[in-house]
Amino acid sequence: MNSLYNKDLLDLTELNKEEFLDILHTAIDMKNNREKYSEVLKGKTLIMIFEKSSTRTRISFESGMYRLGGNAIVLDSKNTQMGRGEPILDTANVMSRYADAIMIRTFSDEMVKELATHASIPVVNGLTDGHHPCQILADFQTMLEVKGSLEDLKIAYIGDGNNMAHSYILGSAILGINVSIATPTAYQPQEEIVKKAMKLAEKSGATIEITTDPFVACKDADFIFTDVWASMGSEHEQNEREKAFQTIYQVNDELVKVAKSDYHFMHCLPAHREEEVTSSIIDGEHSLIYQEAENRMHAQNALLYKLLIA
Ligand code: CP
Ligand code: NVA
Image (cartoon, rainbow, N blue to C red; front, side):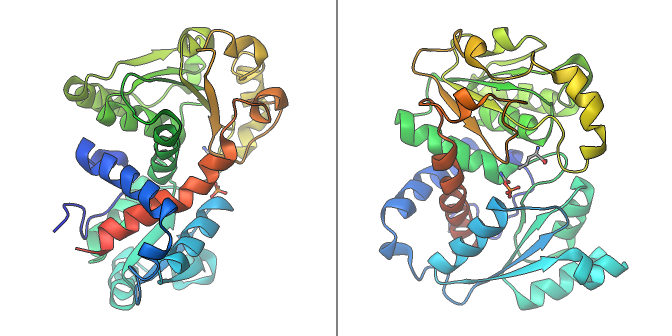
């Protein structure tokens, strides 16, 4: 039995290095051998709950399930009894009787934990305020495709110390990738997550750097990442965030000069061109954004395959 069978993925700390790499290699195999996997989730149903907007997550999970012979049900929580206050306890128990896995995109990590505690089927975090593990699986799969290995790499993340920053820090710490995060002082990643990552890095050998200087972060980087300045749920802070981030925390032609000459740019999307990244970079020759978006589906398929098939 594979060690991920019937587990949850609430954040990346639930994966050890071997499991993480196994998902990435399986994702690449699934991408290259579609027929081989076309019925592996036959008869399986994934329930997807959305309390925040989505394009990629919704489509990649739904298409992905069909690609593996399974089925997906998409729920907008407002139109379910959850939206009218039905307890998570009952929701989790009932869904576990109908389906084989739950994917949820919501605000609170605590709520997802509660859902997972009461569900007898795997629960996958499709983005919370704190984490976006599925995105990192896709991003690291893309890095593996491009480089052939994840050894001796440095990644830089520029912008808000948000769910993406947290997930890059944790993912890198598990896999032994050197990571440097540059954010304004008031928007640094949560200390508790950095501490957890430092502990994981002791084992993997990763270095973790938290700075306020994007030029320090991008120095000799193999991959540069950024994300929106105001995430879902923080849109009302857009103006004050623009003041804090403007120009300094933007991936542009000047900044990338300090990275390796064959650096790659990645962004989870959606992106705001000319805010966190200039068009010259996101639409330029070093950008991998569409390969990265495609890999959401393959990485998640590999994850679901591991969680659902013993
Ligand atoms: N990157 C990502 O999660 O995209 P969506 O918000 O469109 O799902
Ligand atoms: N940090 C962004 C990621 C979107 C995929 C958000 O949470 O809105």
